[in-house]
Length: 361
Image (tube, rainbow, N blue to C red; front, side, top):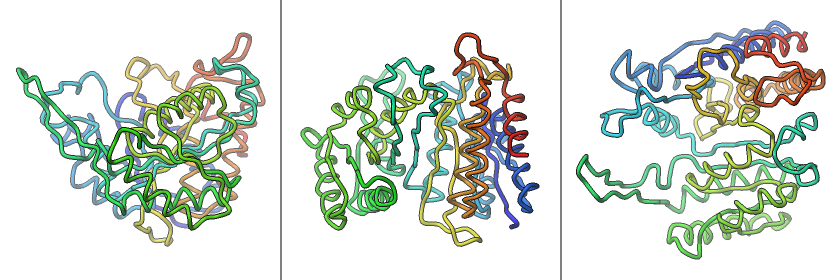
């Protein structure tokens, strides 16, 4: 298979972790007889510095022509001025809109080898295997807003949703739940927010088409508690943009570190292989405090590459090969610093990528 992948390395540790994912993808291509072409493009703070825009037109065009997009992370203190005309995060939100990536899939599966890396008790974590689906192009991040100036004292963000935006992401979540364990939790704040009352009405209508599913509607504050108290009871969780963003960061601690978790952002645009042209990224940020030290955990990005193979290319065997290679490295007791326990061998970013490649061979 001939494949064109755009790489948006971004800022901070983004270039370091994407380099390891590309290394692993090249190994997969060699092992399975594929041809992967990687097209590096700018987005985020590095794009602002080079072009004056967090999302240059050339990057948008390249992403639209690609089969899939691999993203590192964007942002950092250098571009944190709230009064700036452009910020790295604007580029991230804009590319999601440009590619109509309306659903963010974030699997949270605890690797048994890492059960002691979490701060939660072993008995709480055993059996955790859930999928959080976050709506990605609506809500407070995209609704009408007012941002006060230097001397202002008023600002607002509007959590705006339409019926269709809710319907399509809930339907996608229901289809995912059918293929998993048949349980779906829809998250809202319907006791307070009008947009959440619309969310619950539409979700109820959509989920009525799936009578075999076990469905529950959970208020977001209750879900925040349940994820810590009884995470193993959940299968698929679907939430609007802001709630999903917060809950998935919380859920990452179930796996021991944000550095372990991948994600896939999918929409309705198809690539040359008639599969979704998705964008794949670890859920962590740019971590500027450790950038350039080669100590970042690349496994979340490497596992995102596995999701890329599965969802945008239909290469299930190759995706599973990456996931198995990661498991075998962990079996060997090798860790990056964020998931290390006393007495374990600790390695840096590049060595961890090399070890995954070695397991692939």
